[in-house]
Image 1 (cartoon, rainbow, N blue to C red):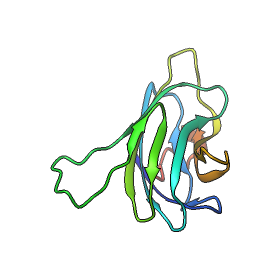
Image 2: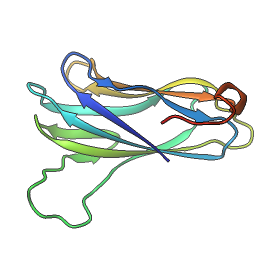
Image 3: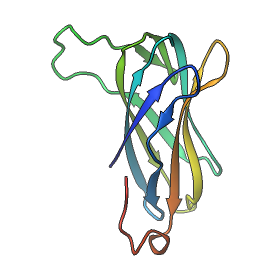
Image 4: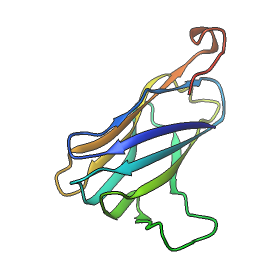
Length: 140
C-alpha cells in the first residue's frame, strides 16, 4: 500500500512527488488524501489515465465513527459531488494487473472539474522494474 497527499485547487492542484510502484505484482493499492483549497467548489471526476489501462476501482474512504464534524462529499460513478473549501477526503485506488498485462511507465490519478473539464489535481504514478528502483527499495 502506498500513500499520497494532494491539494485540490483551481490552478491545477499538486502532489508532493510521484508514487513509484514495482512492476510484476497482481494487485496494488494507493490511498490518496486531498484537501480542497478556496475558492474551489463543485464536482470533480476522478480517473486513472495511462496505457495500457488496467482494471481499477476508486473508493471514497468513510469515517469509521461519524462524529458529525467532518463533511464528506457524495462519491458515485467516479465523481465527487459538492466539494467545498476545507473539505478533506481520502480515496482508495486499487489496481488489478492480470498476468498478461505488465504495467510499465507513467500513469496519473487525475481529478477534473466537471463544469470546466480542467485539471484540479494530478497524482503521478510510475511503474518501474525492481532493478530500476535502487535494488527494489521503494519510495512512496
